[in-house]
Structures are given as C-alpha cells and as structure tokens.
Length: 454
Image (cartoon, rainbow, N blue to C red; front, side, top):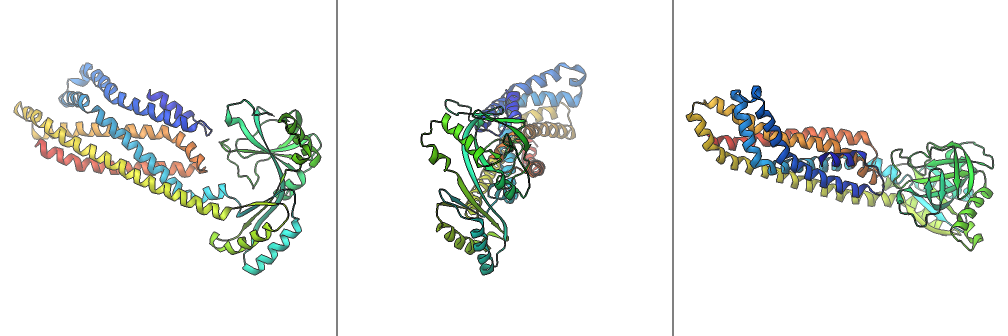
C-alpha cells in the first residue's frame, strides 16, 4: 500500500489529474504508514527475536522484548507522529518555497505590465510609440519592452503531431489553444530575421517541446522548419503541459486564413468572413522600475488605448501581481498556521505518550532492579527503547517527504513556481531544522519519562 502511494507520487505529472493523484497518494500513504507500524514493526521484531545470536545478549534481549511489548501498544500513536511530522515538513516547505520564489512566480505569470486587446480595428505601431515617448518624458519612466502583434487563437485537441476536433473527447490534458502569428509579427517581437516557404512553419510550445518534424492542423500539413526555444510573451516550462499554449508562425496572413478556414469548417462556423476577421491585436508593454512607480504612466496610457477604434479590454500585469501577492500571502498565513497546529499535535502526542508509558513501565523496571539490573543498565535500556521508538516516526517522515516532493513539485507548478533548486533547498533545510526541533522536543519530553520511571 505504501509502495503504491509512493509510486503514484513519483510518477505524477503536472496535468489535470494531479489533484486526484495527490489525494489518492495521501490516502494510501496514511493507510500504509498505519499498517507498517502496527504489523510491519511486529514482524521485524519477531524476526530479530528468532535470531539467537542477536536476541540472547543482555542489551538486545531486554531492548527487543521491550520494543515488542511497546510497539504492540504504541503503533497507532507512532504512526500519528510519523504522519504529523510529514505534514509539518511538507506544509513548511510549500510555505517557504512560495515566499522565497514569489519574484519568479510573478515574472513567469505576468511578463508584461499592461496588455491591451483590439478587435475589428487596430492601432498602428507608430501611434503607440509616439504616445509612449510623450509619457516617458512626462513621467520619467522608460519602456523596457513594447510588443504589438496579431494573434488568432483556435482551441484544438492534440494527437501526436495532429490537431483535430475536440468534440466528444475527455482527455482534457491534450486540449490546447493553438495561436497563429504571421512571420513578420514574430520576427519583430523576437528580434529575428527568419524566412519561410508556404509549406513551412515555426512551432513554439510554452510547455514540453512539440518534438515533431511536421504538423497537421485539421488536414493542413506543414514542415516544422524550427521549434522555437524561447518566446517572451509566453514563458516556457519544459517539464509541464499544464496550461500550455502552442504558437504556430506561418509565412503570411493567407496561410493563416487557410488554417483558420479548415478549423472553421470542421467546427461548423457559418459566417466565415467574420470569423477570419476575429483575430486579436495585442499591444503589450513592460516598464523599468518598481510597480509602485508605474501606476500614473499606465493609467494615462490605458485611457489613451481605450479611446482607439476596436478596443475590447485591458489586462493590468501590475494589478494582477498585487492580487497574486495578496492571495499567496493568505496561503502563506494558512500554511504557517497549519504547520503550527500540526506541530502542536505532534508535541502533545509525544508528551502524553511519554507520561502514559512512564507509568506503565515503572513497575516493570522495579522488577528488573529486584532481579539484579543496575540503575546504569536500566537507564541504558530505557534510552535505547525510547530513542528507537521516537526515531522511527522521524525516519518514516523523511521517507514520506522524499517521495512526496515529486508530487509537491507538480503542485507548486500549478502556482507557477518552477524553481526546483529552490524547492530542493527548502526541503533539505526544513527537514534538517525539523529533525533538530523534533530531537529537542524528544529530549524535553523524555525527562518526564525518566522522572516517573525513577
């Protein structure tokens, strides 16, 4: 059961099924942990008991017998300690990673400060540049990047190198938005000087690479001259297709209309002329400096854009970043709160377990003293037993965390955190810190046990 839970976690991918996989893996690992401590530990101790060379030594005899007795009674509480330890570590890892990786998340999710959408009417590049120059002089902000391009987005289902109709399909992780750009627009945005034949295209995926030498879009087949490795308007994440988009760069608008016509025919679009004119023109800008310094500039530029023909809407990257920081700030608070609650539960279980076992073991150790065991031998036996008992949940939590990080990596990808070095560093640091705090908590609670036994 534990192995299946681990396998689901390690094999998980960032797609539409990751949340279902997460809850299934957690359920199996919790059940597996309980069974491992209640049955697996007893089987292992009985195995040691049958090994005469190991069992019939003074230290091992008492330790193994005591552990066998102790594990039969304490397995449930030890499995709880293991599970709560894992929850504390993973909760704090996610919290710390989100906090430390916030800049990367914002840069990946909102690469521009402002995106203006136009349809059935366009602004010229010269108009936009002239207005930006006026605002630069007025407010002192400098434009770091300005991109204007036309884009036609068509939703499709992907089968290998073919894009086909979505109707009646349920494997939604293979549904993508395919966005068509002309070569002139791409060369201007990417600052390149490429050329294409009629039967050639450039392909870019913001997720995993396309990986084929040709592409078939609703029966229209093209050679892939180059698979683009980087495209600023859509940052790339190689390990995931979650929320990915495909960009297809064609030679000119006539080729784009040919592909759009094939898509429209398959999808039963009646007004072909209106459909072919439904492309969106994007005006996207990124300013230098902090977000707080950009507001007046962006407000005036937004008002100017809103008065142009064909205007439909504005997306503010600055506002979206603020909302994201506020939302993730709430997640950080909840993460810290739950981490503290889980840790309090852990300490309470540990403390009351020591007290209850102290009273149960006191009479046993009195008998051992009467049959000739010294205080030093008794204390050594007690130390070994308690150390083994409380080390087992920590070792189990370490194994659970190591396997769980594969799935946590995917869940962090849902929140646009793809800095896996940061995630690995937080995992190692917090696991080590937790082990130290856990050890201190064990030593403090163990004193109570020793006092009762004495």
